[in-house]
Image (tube, rainbow, N blue to C red; front, side, top):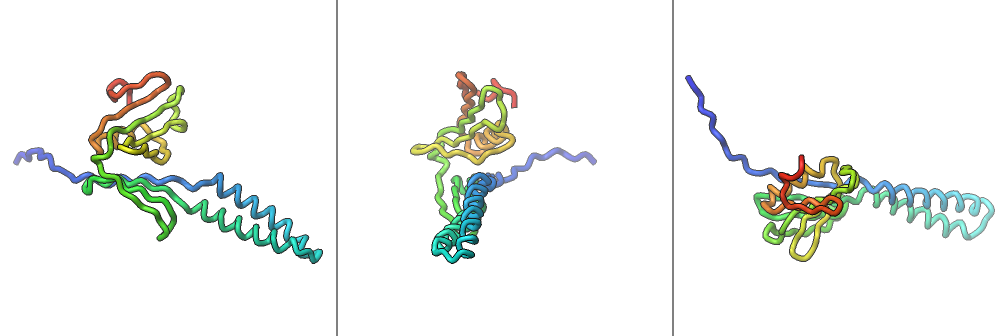
Length: 171
C-alpha cells in the first residue's frame, strides 16, 4: 500500500517577543536603596530626624528597583486576528494596544559593521510609528519570520548599504 504525501495547511501560530529584565535600572535603584538604608541606620542610632527621610527614600528606591525588574515589554503577532498586540507592564497592571496588519509596511533589520547580533535592531515600520522589537539572539531569522508572517517587505540595512532583497544576504 502506497501512501501519498499530502500537504496540510497548519494555521500560523502567534509569535510572542518579550524583553528581559531591566538589570541596569534594577541594580541602580537597589544600590540607591542600600545607600539610603546605610545612611538612615546611623542617623536613627544618633537620634537624628534625617534618618526618617533617608529611610523613606530607601523604601521608595527598593520598590522602584523591584518594579523596574518586573516590568516587561511584549510584542505579540496574532496572524489569525491580523494584528500586532503591544503590552507594557507587569502582572495584571498592563497597558495594551493593537495595530492592524494593514498599517504595517515593512520590517527593517539594522546590522552593525561586524554583523553581530548584539548590535542589531529589528523594527516593524507602520503608518505613524516604528515599533522596535525586543532584542534577540537570532535577528536575521526573526526578521525573516516577521516579514513572512506579516506579508510585508524585508529591509536589511548594513553600514551604508540598504537592500530590500533578502536573497542578497545569507540567513
